[in-house]
Length: 250
Image (cartoon, rainbow, N blue to C red; front, side, top):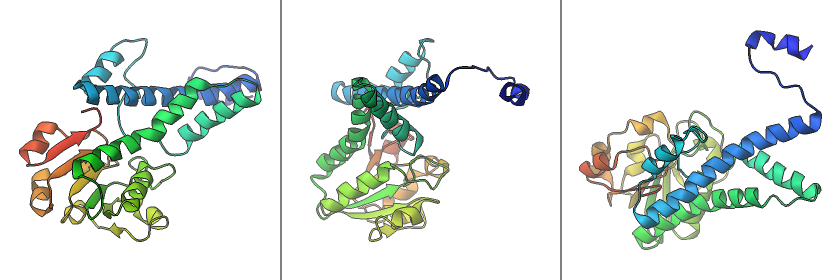
């Protein structure tokens, strides 16, 4: 009956047992999470060696056994599906007597990726006490108000715990974050976020942030320091606009 139901989709149909079906579902998302954590680990090597993570990802992705999908370095994966399914597969392994050490490390790389990014900001600013930091984007990914496992929450936590003032703007997710962090300053646009900040940080790659004219933001910031957590901007254009530019993998 199910084969007939899905016949019109002209998609492959795999008939298997329930146990295999469950592991296929867990395994697919866990494998995608592994690709993301792998390229994020490579980004740290790129930062340390002076390599270009964009070229590295492109070169790896040209191997048709690997492919380019999910090889975009960034702040790490969030949301509901990948964290839940990675943890689910680890837990399933534990129940069955198998320690899935590979996925434990995938999870750990993801946990520390945004902390590593925050540490780079901390070092550049000489600490966060008395500093003002502006965040562009709060949702775990663009085009949603979902903040489950959003990297913005980790970044805000670290900034506030060390005495920073935080301004932030997200087109749709601000109200959800406000329920968690009611005391930071929520703005109506990127220009308001940038006013008087010591550092601007791109957290979520909304299209409207990709299209920002950094020349318009330069006059209102206190310090022209820009940390791009999603590799959305061109270093050349950011520097031409008068910003010091830092991103994942460089």
